[in-house]
Structures are given as C-alpha cells and as structure tokens.
Image 1 (cartoon, rainbow, N blue to C red):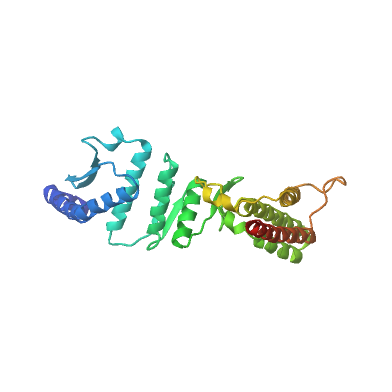
Image 2 (cartoon, rainbow, N blue to C red; image 1 turned 90 degrees about the vertical axis):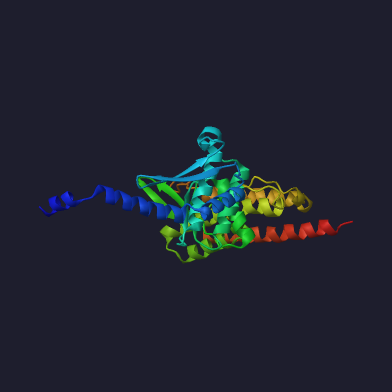
Amino acid sequence: MIAVNKADTFNKRTWKSNSTNTEKQLSNKFFNKDYINAFNEECEKLDGNFGIDVDARSSDARSNRQLFLKGNAPSVILSEGEQKVIALADFIAENEVSEINTGMVFDDPVTSLDEERKCHIAERLVAIAEYKQVVVFTHDLVFVSSLVNASESKKIELRCHWVEKNDNSIGIIWLDNSPSFEKKYKKSGIAQDFCQNAKKAPPEKREILVKSGFAALRSSYEAFVIFDLLSGVVQRFNDRVSVDSLTGVHVDQHIVSEILDAFGLACRYMEGHSHSDKYSVKKPTPDALNEEIERFNSLKKEIKKYKKSVEVAP
C-alpha cells in the first residue's frame, strides 16, 4: 500500500527536470573545455591528430559525447587502427581531467596498429606511469618490448607477468616472466640460482631444477649472441635495427664453435627425456650444470678480451 501511495504521488515532470539538471552539471564538469583540451593533447601525443571535433549533447537525462570528423562519425572515414587511437585519446583524456587519481587498466590497446603507433602508445603509457599505476594486458610481444624499452629509458619501474591457460585451468600467472626480458639473462645468475637450489633439493625435485637451470642457461646463450656476439644490432621483439652497433661486432670462430656446442648441450639436458631406458641420454646433475655455467662465464670473459684486442689492433 505504501508503494502504491508513493507511485500516486510521483511527479514525472519534476523527476525528469531534476535528472536533466544533474546531468547538465556532470556534463559541464566532465565534458567541458578542460576535457576538450585534454583530448586534443592526447591526440597529439598519440600521433592521432585527425581533426576530430568533440560535441557534448544532453537529452532525457542522458549524457552523450560525440566525436565528429568533417561532419561524419570517425568510423566512416578512419581505419580501425586510427579509431583505436582516438578511443585511447578519449579514455586517457577523461581520466586525466578526473578529480580522482586512480590507476588505469588497458586491455590489448594496440590491436590493428602498426609498429610505429605501438611505440607511440607505449611511450605515452610509460609517461602516465610516472604519476599513476598503469596496468596493461596484451598478447603483443612487440608492444611488450616497446613498454620495456620506454620504461628503461625513463627509469620507470616495470613488472611483467605471464598469464596462460594450462590444461583445464585459466589465469595461471607466472610472476616477473616475459620472453622480452632478454637482458635478465645477460649473466648466468638465473641458472646459478637453479643450480644452488638443486644441490639442496631431494632427488625427485633435483632433476627438475637442474633441467630448469639448463633452460635458463640456454636463454643466457641466446642473450649472449644478441648482446655480446652481435652487440645488440638486432633484438627480438624490437622493430629497430641498431646499425651503429655494427662497429662492436667482432666474430671469433672459436667462440662461435663453443657457443654452438654449449647451446646444444643445454638443449639436450633441458628436454624432458625419460631415463628408464638404459640407452637414454645421461641424467643432468648439479655438477654438470655448474660446469656449464662456468664455461658460459669463461666465454663471456673471452669475448670481452677478444673485442678489446681487436679494437686496439692497428
């Protein structure tokens, strides 16, 4: 009965008027000149200055922010990638003018974009990360590499985690893990950690840790080739070739042969062989891993010494 009485006394005109006034206040607050300026600035920073006009309209307690390009909706003229840039500019601008300094979450923001635009967006997101937390979900390894490079350039802390589906489980997270983190393997530290843990582990876990150590050592040899042998001229997941770095490329065939032998050995030991067959490959041991780690460290010193000898030679 109370609900019926309230319904009878409900004034639709007053409710609509109050709702419209509230909408106008919010529209003036969030879709005002400050937002338009912020939107235009973001378009510039994202290399997306396509001549977009912003129009904020209101009717029936609904707030509508519409974007126009030469009298048409952007979807009529702009490509899918260009529309993505405009949507990002809109989202970032709205967040920038907000009075609440919250973090920002992006879900695959670079689909349908070329490498140059990915780089622009990575640099912009890292710049935002200087004063607020930025979380990015993406499967694009080139974009991940751009984020890593931009973060290192600005000395911004970055943590990269790997999320995958395993059997019937989804959302399995591997902390601080990404194939673009090659620089973590420039030294043998990760392999050494596995080796030390293997020495203290019971037999049933020891072999797993040793194999993981050889896997890490293999990654270190890949980084060795990229950064030591080829001086970082070409890097995976990076679209740029550092031609200037060619001056640091000096190849010694003895070192190359050692790398090939050690890399092949690491691959054999890290693979999941069954050892029930008496003819199967020899089981990897912590001592064998430690020996290969020492060989890796020795090769690092050798190539450094070789490069110096070549550079000072007349």
